[in-house]
Length: 394
Ligand code: SAH
Image 1 (cartoon, rainbow, N blue to C red):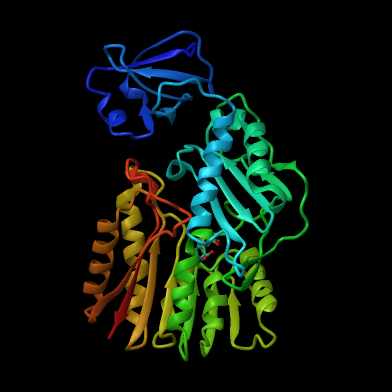
Image 2 (cartoon, protein in one colour):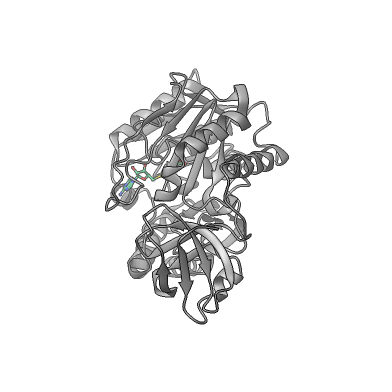
């Protein structure tokens, strides 16, 4: 095999032997051969024993592993891996259900494809690449998608402009790399959503909250619901479907509020139960005493790095104190964190501290996480990022 060689320091082979798909810069002893960003490299331990093959990139994560098998990486690998990912979505029913045509097709490390995210929106695949190696294989990835999805695929939109490391030589531009799509209404468990992948956040929609939205519907009957950090109004649509008495959506972005209103209009003839406010969440929560008996808090990731973890936890605490303090007796709080660096234990402790602060009797009813189309690679605990608690406040 003629790949440049990356030799690890003594003892630094342990995590690779446990199939962790990242190699950090500090683990590398030397590199033999001429290597460019995005190239495949052959990784060995200190004694020249083969460990893995992966994409090289300058940065703290220097190699993202594509294969733990010692074999030439053929172009067919893309189709093989994407097909496996699709089979899993079919097996779990999420890609075959009649009332659902939006799901995550590829969840990076969770599908053995570090650096690659693909969300499927009723015919349009929106792909987001986080590594140069993936970016250089765009064409293979598109061809694989065409082969695997067949006539289910009408367009592929590449949204990597802001996810490719800005220091690299690549100037990624967002745009269609196959077909073009004007149809952007999707169905999630029978609910309609307008998705704007060109302008929206991330790939356009937070697919990861699907099951949790469904649970909100189950608790909404007769309740006054407040959906904070609502974005597309996903939770609000489900609360309305679940016969909430009233639903209020809050997001600081005007665009998000417009989108929320559009999505409510798409699903309901009579929208008088719903109202949306473009205001800051912390401000809005200053004065909601006894107004709501179901509150959803789904903030953006407060911590993107370990070094700001403490501040992030303080943010979650402040937010949850406000909600727990003021929710009506017998109220239900759905509270989430999507920060990868906030562990399940840390999040739970934060809610515990918030509850203690209010002195109210709080009990956990559900512990929530990410859905089946966001699988967690057991060898890569970092792929688990979404956590939520449903608590009952007496
Ligand atoms: N719950 C949403 C996803 C939330 S994403 C869903 O189910 O799809 C986080 C949202 O929080 C974004 O729409 C962003 O505009 C909003 N946001 C960020 N900071 C905010 C703040 N201080 N006050 C209100 N909204 C905020």
